Length: 416
Length: 150
Image 1: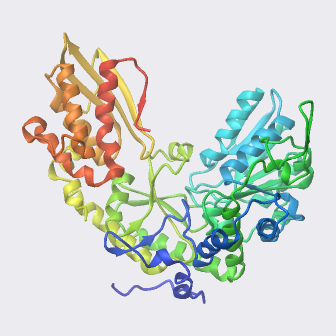
Image 2: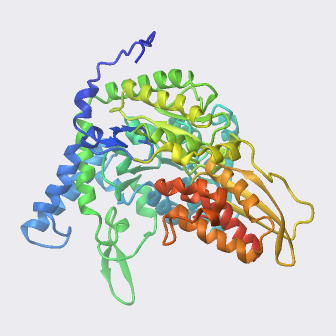
């Protein structure tokens, strides 16, 4: 590889040591070292998470909140222990503000369904942003249709930054909730959540933050943000798939009706009337993904053992370096150039469809996402059918950026 | 290991660069829209069918090289064929790109369409190759509903 007049890396992050924690990073794809740059879709798992899940099934498996025997008690302790860990991870006031769900999608559906039934009536307005993932659009559309409410969109500029003046205007007395991504999955924009919450609360409007991309990249403090809801997907923050978290302020969660009925969410059941359990159990009907929760707990522990400031600095270094190096690829245009960005780079190659780009770089062992990233309105806004997206985690390296760039330079050769 | 040159054969690259029958028709008798949500491919297909014979085909849309070249080659391949012949060709094509029971395909049946044989090594791209054909099928059925590969 040729010497580069470097943007010098200023981080002290020991990326080689970190990479050894993730066994999959040592594997091959098409005979080449795997260059995994699709962390926005899902992150890889450290050995500690894999071990925690195996260990749970090898020696800790029992249903929770049921048995009086030792095994069930230890499973319950692991399950509830993770709740306390997640509460600390997000700096929630209380453990009971942490609801286990399948992921961000279910968390948003829960709020749209339950909080929506409670608060959103005909003629009311629901605010989402122009850069939302489909999972933070469609549940609100369903609610709007059911309630006769109106979905309003906070617009953005061509860099992929929300227009705050327009946002202020949308915070009318008809607004019932704001639902906005902490970090855009397709553009990388980090939204000014604290300011958005302050403005919304000034008008008495609660705010749900889609934290699917926020939690892996940022240290999240829900009390500092003062958001009403924050949603997390375990698998995007180095935990397993199938488990995630809804944080909600206790006052909201207590007032909200149940989302699903079933076992574990009741206080008492007769055919005449059922009374519900207090939170968080009220929102956790049925046997949960206990093994997944244990894995999530291990992921939170793993992140807790890292220097997150150094991790974030390393990611910012990858963002800067990647932005510069991708800029050397002829005909490449970056989509999403917000001033405040996470380590996500969406791009298009002039005249070549993103899906062809994805297939060709895959042959070099590089995994990137191609398509609309479940953000079709964003693609429409930028008038592109699709983009390719490299999304970095703290275990990625500048050398991996170089492999991507070389592979991209080869794309045009295929098309002669 | 799958080889990129098997996927992006010269015929495919060339038809992607200069697609045939990339136009709208005056007074089409049949049309259908297709899309592939995975990669954002969109195709709008128009036909002029006289009796049972496909006299003219035009397509518009945007998509990856595979979907665009496939649409282009398909329009050339089905011109002058009956709808039944076109459907048979679709079946042979489909079997070829999915590695189905009749694969490897008989080159005398598929002609230039045999350029898509490499697609079977790239399962994620099969939908791209098939989109135009699914859309053709929908146009011939002509119930007008947009079709999707998802």
